[in-house]
Amino acid sequence: MTAWLNPLNDLAGGLFLLTAFAMVATRQVRGCLRFFVLQSFCLIASALLIGAMTGVKELFIVAGINLITKPIVIPWLLRRSVPREIYAHREIALALSVPTALLIALAIAVFSYFAGRMLIGGAEVTTLLSNVPIGIAGLLIGAYTIAVRREALPQLLGLLAMENGAFFLGVAFTPQLPLPLIAEIAAAFDTLIIVVPVGILTRSIHERAGTTEVGSLTKLKEERLP
Image 1 (cartoon, rainbow, N blue to C red):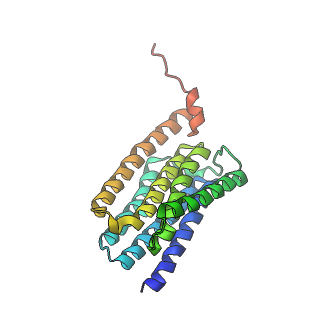
Image 2: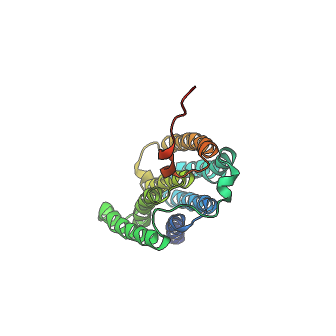
Image 3: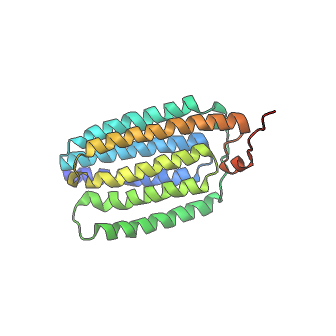
């Protein structure tokens, strides 16, 4: 059974990495959200496949938790808390041009590959061979996405993409770790706790300043009371 499950896990990892590149390249807020949802589905698929290969039943529950929170609850919370005008914007302000940003993201992926191989060492576990370097790449590219974006919501999605990368890396080590289910439940609630206040703050900033560009916030000043 593992003979055909492992290639499927490699396919999920490849698609996961492609969505990370897509989040760097897209210039639409709605596109960033859609690619985050697709990335979450790839993460869920990997958790299910590794659970089937290793026999760790907790991974199926973890996949169910992620299926509820990331593709369903998080987009719903963002649409409820963030003004619709933000999703209607066609262009997202970028610190770098798209080709330059993609080249740097590619360099990060290559570095992650070699870093992952060094971390694995001589391990013969097949799931580690793809999940570790791709998880590291997802984590670092998510952090890089935060750096090249100037809008608050895409930066939040970059932060959530970092969490996806950390989870994609972590599921490979789940059979060797104690209590993976409790840890994932805690991480899921932490993610929701981050999304709700950031969405509300984004709405408030947009209503007061007319923009969500982080750089523009330095121009804001407190109003003096009469």
